[in-house]
Length: 63
Image (cartoon, rainbow, N blue to C red; front, side, top):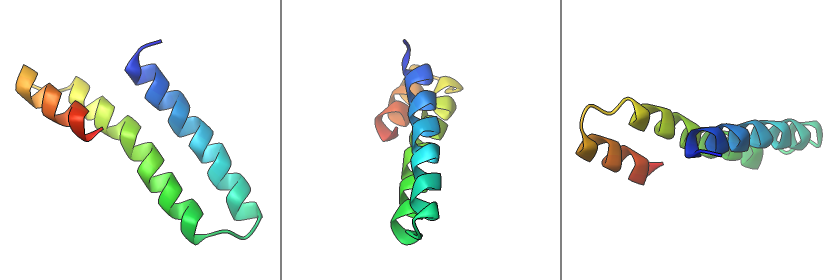
């Protein structure tokens, strides 16, 4: 499985966890978890569209 698929699956799993936390009235940590977990996938997607190898590497490092 490639990093794009792994990061996407991770994001989906974290969305499920977020929903569970919200059902249990945990709003602060759950929101931060959702933002940080889904940003990994977003950064990997952005890196895939990098225009140079250096751009790709920099964005993957952020992810």
